[in-house]
Structure formats: structure tokens, C-alpha cells
Image 1 (cartoon, rainbow over the protein chains, first blue to last red):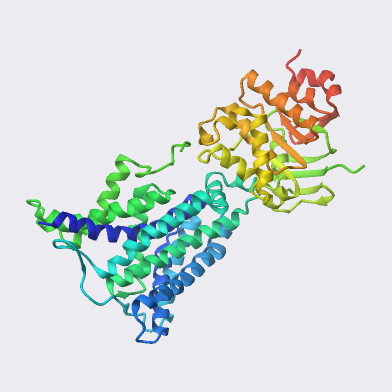
Image 2: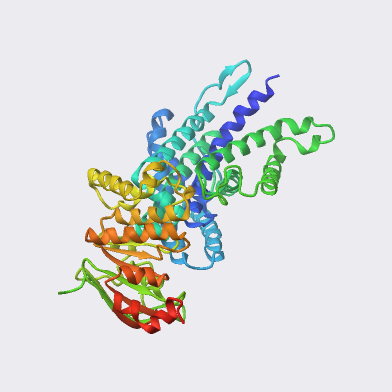
Length: 310
Length: 238
């Protein structure tokens, strides 16, 4: 029986993907206290940006060579849309009641889906996304990593590490922390907080594009609706980990991913719960987990909401 | 001689409520000027407007020869106007050293910044001892020292201090006031807002008494300290 290690490996890949998206929610929330419900669509746009590059490249380009270019293309698309959303949709509402930007975000989410549906060639149905050829890697006896999961298992920790170092060590990163903790006082230090807010949206967008490529590789296709459930899950992960905390977002993603994988594998083996297991119920168990965490630890796993101390 | 800061007929409103109703005063280089008055007199609103956090309704503000009304807050700091806000507002989850570095955010001279951080540690030794600690773990008085040290890190031409003695023990308050006197001795120009009128007027070259958004009385620190109406209203004498 290698069910447990295999479940952990599969869950980790899924969780890393959620974590990359969750970081976008959490960074924006940490700085402007806005839940950017259009972030799932930023992921979707990144997927189509990457696909566009793939379609432009000659058909015989090896995927390993195309991947960096696809990532750049996806990131350009995601970052452009995320920062434009900040500038034109959210910034004018910065002093409005909090419900206004929230409703705007939902409207933006629908608008972005429909724009892709209407204007991207053949996007009314799913579009195929390239995948690596070949078998899965065998880590040990019967524990497999899918080739297409390898990408996110490498990319997510690298992105996380780079972001962590940037926020903790660089001058701009310190300005981001200051803006998150006390925006007015940050201005008194000479920090252009508008620029910091744009940067938070841009970083979230870039990470969303990496996640979109990972999702495309896993599923072998992307579509204009893909952002909805991914966004919802990643938002769950961000809350689970403690919204506003970037490490919490990744941790929340991983916990959620593993919980989903475990629920698929194990719940059907529990006597009397046969019908509640399997893939069809994994979303239900993911949200049950969220509700439990919110009941027991409302600030999330690594939440900082109450503490003023490090 | 033109003043470093010239405020003329400044008016500020929150929605429909006018908090500052046309005040005029100046701060000359090398001086300490104080605004005193009760809670709600408009002192903090005045400072927040001068540093660009609030847009005024009307009036002019000239700093170092140029109008700064409508200039964003982060650009006003660059002109040499530093503001240590009411309630200290240190960055609680950053270390003391990081807080001080943020005070020098716009400066590029790494060596000079390092020297100024050392100077802040000499001025307030407790900050040096706890340099690597999160600022939120400091006591109220220590946080006030950090807030002042941080404001000085931009090497300001004018330092605005809002209620530096608020909530402090008498010993800590005396320490803070001594520091303000030291800063003056080294030539720092200060605009001091205080509810502790006694302490503020003793230090100040000149002072203005604010009541519900207006300046009702102005004079030298010594004159105001001996003014009968000031003594009655703000120094707790019958």
C-alpha cells in the first residue's frame, strides 16, 4: 500500500498550484484590504497569454524550450490586466464603502470571462494546451510524479523563495511591508504607496500566470471558465493560511491540496461514507475544511490579524 | 527674512465639518514653534494637512520658498518636511533598525544613513540595544523615541512632532522634552503640537493657542506661559 505517500505527492502538486494563486489574493488584501474576486480570471488570462505564445511558435518547438517564452507571455497578459484593473476599476473606488470594490471585482470577473469567450479564437470551447510526452517519474515503489506536475513542484518553491527574499530584504519589499502595516505613515516616509499597490497587483498577476501554465500542463486544456473554481479554491487557501500572510497562502494551498487528494482517496473507504468519497466530492471536503478552520481559528493558520508583534 | 514655513488662512474640512477655519502662522529656521490647545482644536489636522495626508479646503502653505498645497505626501518628505505622527505609528512588525531605515527611505547615501542610525542610537541608547527586535514590542515611551528617531532619519529642514508626550510617564516625558531641547540646540527647526502646554511653552520660541479650528492667541513661549487666560485654560490654575 503506497496510498499515503502517493496522496501526499499528488496533493502537494495541486496545493502548490493553489498556493501560487493564493499569494495574489493575499498580497492585494494585505495592502489594500480588497478581495480581488477577479483574480481567478487573471489566472485564466495568463493561460491564454501562454497559449498564444505556444501557437505562435513553430509547431516543432520542444515544450521545454517553449515553456520559458510561454511563461513570459502569460505573465505579460496577466500583469497587464491585473494592473489595469487596479488603475481603472479599483483605484477610483479606494475611498468608497468596501462593498463597492467587491461588486466591481465580481463584475470585472464576468466581463473578463466574456471578453475571452467572445474574442479569443475558438475559446467558446476548451482549447488544448501542450503537455510533456512520456511516462510519469517513479520516485520509489509505485509512487509517481506526473511529468506535468513536476513543473509546479519546481516553480512554486522558487517563486515563493524569490518573493520572500524580495519582501524581507529589498528596499521596495520593506516599503511594501510598511504600506501593509500603516499606509499613511508609509507616505510620511516618502513611499509612493500608489506604486506599491500596483506592484502588489503585478506580483499577483505574474504568479497567476505561472499557476495558469501549471494548470494547463496538468489538464492538457484551458478554457474561459477555468478561473472560477481555481480562484475560489485559492481564495479558500489564502483564508485558510491567514489572509495577508504570503507564507500562509502557500501553506493554506498545500493543506487544501493534500486534503482534497486525501478526501478523494480515503473517504470512500470509511464505512457508510462510500458515496461521499471520490473525485466528485473533493470540492465539498475542501470547503468543509475551510469552515472548520474558520470555526476553530478564524485568523487562519498563520494569521496575524490580532497580533501586532512578530 | 522669509520663514521656512508660511501658513496663510489654511482651512481644512472633513466632509461638511470644518476642522481648521483659516489659520495663519510661520515657522522661522532654527526655532521651535508650538501649537497648543485642547482635543479637537484642529492641531493634528493642521499637521496632517501640512505633510500632505489631507487636502486643504483653502489657503496657502509655502515651505522653503515653494507652495506645497496639492503636493502628494511622499513628495513633501523629499522637500525636507518630516512628520512624527500622533500616536507614534511605528511599523510594529518591522524591527527597530528597519523602522529607522524606512525613515531614510528617499536617501541614497548608504554611509550617511548608517551614521545617522548610529546617531539615533546615541540619542536613544535603548533603540540600539533592541535594534533587531520588532518595534511593536517596545514600550510607549520607547516607541516615541523610535518615531522621533525615524523622522530625523530623513535629515529634515523642519521636524513636525505631534503629541510626543502623549501617554508617557513623567520621567519618559521629561526625557522626550530634553531631547527636543537638544535637537533645537543642534539647529533643528521644530513645529511642536502638544496638549501639555506647560512643557511645550517652556521649550518654544513662540506659540499659538488653538480653539475649535482657530488661533485665538499668539505670542512668545514665555509670554504665553505667563498669560492669565492660558494659565487658567491650559495649565490647570484657578
